[in-house]
Length: 76
Image (cartoon, rainbow, N blue to C red; front, side, top):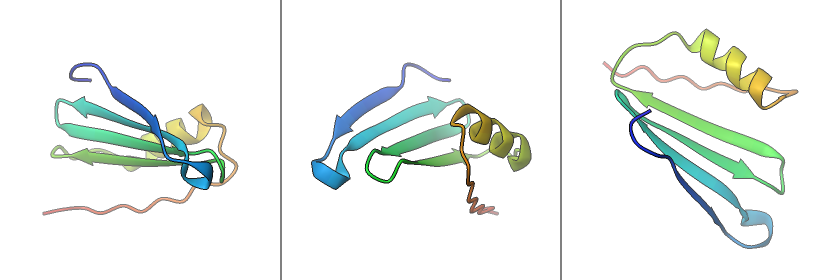
């Protein structure tokens, strides 16, 4: 991590939840928690290549996810 994370809770009703922004040395990680849908959205942006499989495994375990949907975009 680079610095402290920015954590904010906002929204009303079905749109209420937390958003987290953590800068990392190679870019940033953004996380959105959806209270109503009991979902977590994680965006990892990095200028450095990394293997997505260990990240998927860690996130699934950490959040105790029953379902994991991954969308991966590689920029060139």
